Structure formats: C-alpha cells, structure tokens
Image (tube, rainbow, N blue to C red; front, side, top):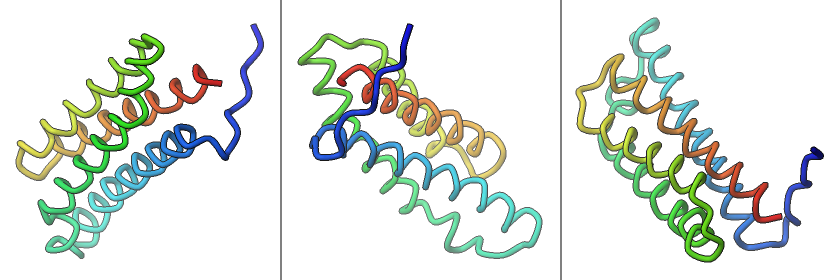
Length: 127
C-alpha cells in the first residue's frame, strides 16, 4: 500500500484543509503555552484565558471544517473525516463549557488533534 501524495498547493480545498491543520496547531500551542505560562510562571492569565479567543477558535474551526470536511463528505461520501472533525469540534465546544483548568485543556487538546487528523485524512483522500 503506497502513500498518496498531498494535493497540489493550488487547490482551494487543499489550501483550506491545510489552513484547518494550521489553526488546530495554533490552538494546541495556545493551550499548552497557556498552561505553562499561567501554571508555572503565573503570567498572561487575562489574555490567554479570555473566553473570546476560545469562541473565535471554535468558530474558525467550524467554518473551515464545513468548507472542507463537510463539502468532501457531501461530494464524496467520506464519513471518517466527518466523524473525526465533528467529534473534535464537539470536544472543543465541551471545553468552552468547562471552567479553565485541566479538564478544559484535555478536551481542547483532544479536540484539536481530532480536527487536525480529520483535515489530514481529508487531504489524503481527495488526492
């Protein structure tokens, strides 16, 4: 079984899938850096824990996910990326509903990993 190459960078859906992976990565870095800066150093709580940042990240993930993963599911019947992405977004939404802390961080990290995985699977399947 050989691995398929990534789609050409010029493809619009491929670009948005890559954007989805990038946004997921930023979210992951934000979460881990926030835990470190606030928990270990006691810095940045007002900015890093601002609920608006988390709501914006969820909204961005949802919009990009619908544009790429949702459209691929409708067009090609791809259920795996859709299931991964929807589960990841649900975990991220659950994280927003929790108070800041370990549970929120774990839900967010698991959610963004699933969303990024959905975009990667989507990229590989649409080649």
